[in-house]
Image (cartoon, rainbow, N blue to C red):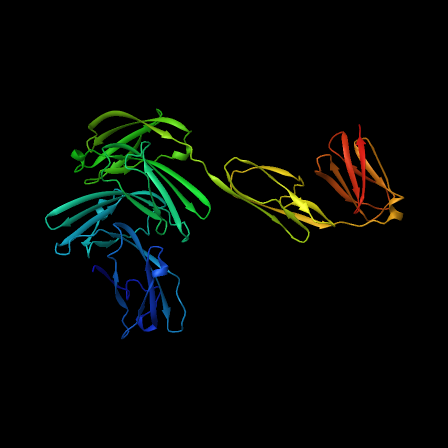
Length: 435
């Protein structure tokens, strides 16, 4: 059985805790907390062997938190590692570096095919991971695209990714491990490639797309410069160090218009000698539909209800509506607009809250004195005091409301036409406004 040997003292302890302050530790791989294991301190020493024999080949995380002698648990902490199962009898070593920084490579022995990868200092976005493994007399060179976004919360996050437009290595999916995923690009042919990834955080989808170039293997031992430009713009450069064959390009794909684009590129060496002539490739900036969440709420369910929300395709037109209960009136939405029903075009996750108020009452004696008339683009109300006067258009949209006084009040309306005027709880009159 293959096991990983982890020493927590000095390496994984959080803060300034010593083994004497630690009671026990819980650890688990990836998102599998259901199968977490517990390690107890013995003789002030906290270390354990963790069974990794059932883990798949590729990137994983070791997650842990510790409990002090007062019973308090620390916040979980995570560490990434690559798992590359190797024959137990063969000595195995590795060397890896990130992006083009081969000068700061990391080397060590593969312990049952496993090595830690420190990505804590990487910026969010795409990276290249180059790995050289020496297993006995066999040397293996692998290159991986490494997408890293530490801003992603620790909640379960799935992704779907693919290369180019013809999906030559097929669609692949999985779970982002602490905001990171790694995909094997070793078998991709020489030339320009496009990588696309969609990942979900809760109910929201994030879409990323970027270009990278894979150098000819015959040039892999030389420090090179890739020159490239899109649609005849200015040339940009990307440096490629010795033993590296992949480089990501500084292109903002989401800023490009949808459709086909042309990218031109050539390679020079340190003496500015052109090693490959100007070449042209096509790539497509495709539109991938996004979905947004519409949340509609009532500020007080006793005062009224609202139409349900849901998930909708971007730029969808959606109608929301507030429904006051008996004895209540809808007043406004949280953005102070009073349209009801109301149409929206969704371009992001959106929340609307409907506000209601108690409807004033009015007795029959007061009704006999109410006078409502129109003129000069105004609706006039007199004969009743301390009641709410509401003006609606014929679709039921609230246009305006005021509180009546002992004097005549004037309520402006936007255009000529027919309106409904409601006083208090029950008195309604239809009135025509002319200029």
